[in-house]
Length: 439
Ligand SMILES: *[C@@H]1O[C@H](CO)[C@@H](O)[C@H](O)[C@H]1NC(C)=O
Ligand SMILES: *[C@@H]1O[C@H](CO)[C@@H](O)[C@H](O)[C@H]1NC(C)=O
Ligand SMILES: *[C@@H]1O[C@H](CO)[C@@H](O)[C@H](O)[C@H]1NC(C)=O
Ligand SMILES: *[C@@H]1O[C@H](CO)[C@@H](O)[C@H](O)[C@H]1NC(C)=O
Image 1 (cartoon, rainbow, N blue to C red):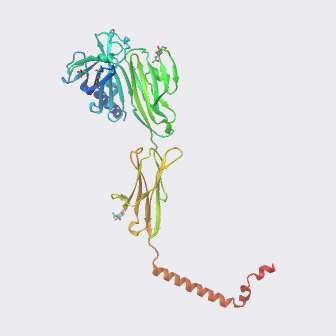
Image 2 (cartoon, rainbow, N blue to C red):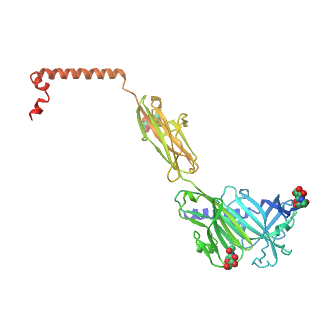
Image 3 (cartoon, protein in one colour):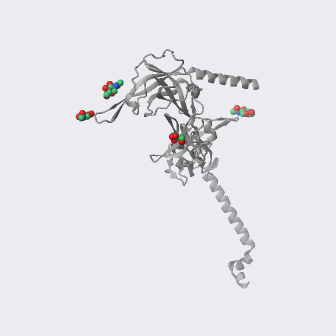
């Protein structure tokens, strides 16, 4: 058993290691810009969409795609690929942009970074929302700092050109989109890493509320100042800037922004929080419903307390055949005629709905299973709840007549017998209140 486990772990690890090395390059969308001033000194930005490659390797490697702009990422303390572990290149969307430091020129505190750096922001998104990663690529330049409006002096980058860069900072969230149940505790994930020791960083969390940014938390490592709550300082030192939400409420829905800055660069990562409550489903009848043929009953399926609004209720009818303990369930037939009451808004802002139909008991339906299926985005599989209909034949009219006749005969017979026997006491029985008044 232990051996099997070891082998499994080995395969799991080697698969992970392999996939790290599988990505040797990624096709990227380079959003380049041409910024100019118009004749009224207004800044005009023209966006240029270009083909680029994010290539991992050593200085001097030849580009895998000669026609594209190559961003060659050479070794540093940070390996971007480590943050995409277990994910294939085809599952990652890569985007590159130039980054303006708006004139701030500080020496990046790593060895060999004496002069001016040009910065590129690389965003890697998992296509199914497993993560968003932003990496800052530092490209040392032999040019002097261009001054405040660096974007007005972007050096042109030609197709086929290779820019040798190193990763200076990485910020990642594993929860770009969080689905939270009401009152649940949530962790909005945000982690960061910087390529040098004891970096001077600032971490902030904001929330977009009615179009305004509201600050939730901030920590400045150089001043040691912390405002707000939600992030554990102990975790911050290890690069974990995750925000802890103690209880998710309807009012917690919305966009949260994790920002990490190390002068002169800043990363903002969005985390969207949506409330999602699963419906509770009830039927108004027992699991086995016995009815007489020809009788009708309203069957109600209630879905309660779900959020958001969209819910879908369907009814199925199917025959159950039990032959020696194997239950054969043929494909369910959807009931066409049923009605739904409008969504009801509950006090806690969740919704409820009831779906119903009038079931007329017919012998042909006896033994059939009726199922209410509730579909909602919070459910991987719909919730299904069923009852089995058991229809009893009404007692036939002939049997009824015979029964009635027998009954009448019996009553008449009994009455006659009694009349004969109690003939003498008849007078006193005809004055029933007489006795009472005497008492
Ligand atoms: C940038 O814009 C200016 C003015 O519109 C134009 O003359 C120049 O050719 C553009 N450069 C590029 C690379 O598109
Ligand atoms: C400035 O440019 C606008 C169009 O972009 C043009 O209509 C206008 O005549 C120009 N003004 C001057 C003073 O060149
Ligand atoms: C962090 O604190 C230092 C020292 O007080 C200050 O110079 C710097 O501007 C602060 N950084 C941010 C982003 O507020
Ligand atoms: C069910 O099982 C019983 C006893 O095991 C057997 O006698 C009978 O023939 C079986 N019926 C069918 C339909 O297989």
